[in-house]
Image 1: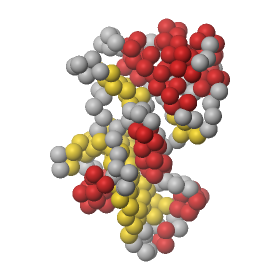
Image 2: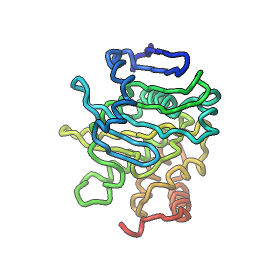
Image 3: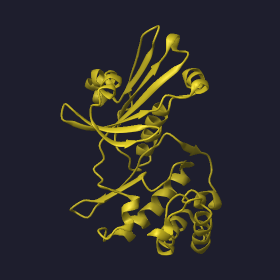
Length: 258
């Protein structure tokens, strides 16, 4: 990630903000055209809910574009004046993870649209390179991953590194941890959906609670707990007990279905 991103502001009545990694400066026209591209249905939709993710190819680059939903009326003014956009937070958190050596798809930039005089927020877009990882955490329950134990151990260690840096992913669920293995045996592990991150110290209880949204068998919890505890100097048995306890009270948990 270039240390000197490009910042660009335009418009008086309907101002916009564009921030790009300097390496991708040539993508400015593409970034500014995102509202029109979404309006005409361009790209492959890979997630559609409150927010929408699409894969788009532009000038040889395979990109993932996340369009954040338009905030409700009050938050249009909160995000317009007082709070950074979700796209901006996603970009800043991705850069921070890269600085820590924690995997995440390479951030390209973000684009914000505001209403009249910039007082009301409209939409924001966050763009990354498309991840090389073919699998999500939930695929660990399938029959095709013969290196699942290695992935789980790596997740425990990665989460510990994140917590030691006083960061915690607030949507640490089955769809937001990506993984794969290269032909040479190198394990890839990446975190996505980074707009909500806790910042501050995490003790053993808070750290183990951060795993609560990840479905896991006792064996899976044991592997993550052992790696997490070893990296942070905690008691592995207590981490395992806490992970099991926090997961057991999750509403709608689906562990028994696997």
